[in-house]
Every structure is written in C-alpha cells, then in structure tokens.
Image (cartoon, rainbow, N blue to C red; front, side, top):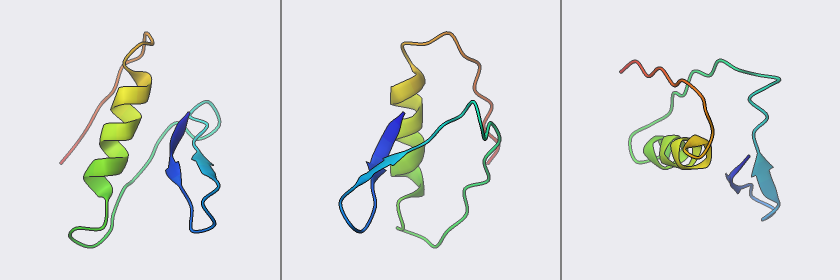
Length: 54
C-alpha cells in the first residue's frame, strides 16, 4: 500500500506481506502519527488484525 512520498516525490510503498512487523521510532513532530494513520486507513477495507503498543 502507498503510505506517502519520499524526498524525490516518488511513492513510498509498504509491502506488509514481506515485512509484517514494524518499529516506528523518530523525533517529536516527525510524522509517526501520520504514517500510522495512513497504514490504518489503507488497511481498513481489508480483513486484517492490527496490534499497536505505545
């Protein structure tokens, strides 16, 4: 699924079948929540289970 764009404005595509576990760590106001929102919105129409730990 496409979750954003990289510096060159190319699509950033995440293949969760290949890498199913993610650790999202970055500085404050760097876009972590935006990435998680894009992932959840992209997966919402599908039959999947999501587990989040904060």
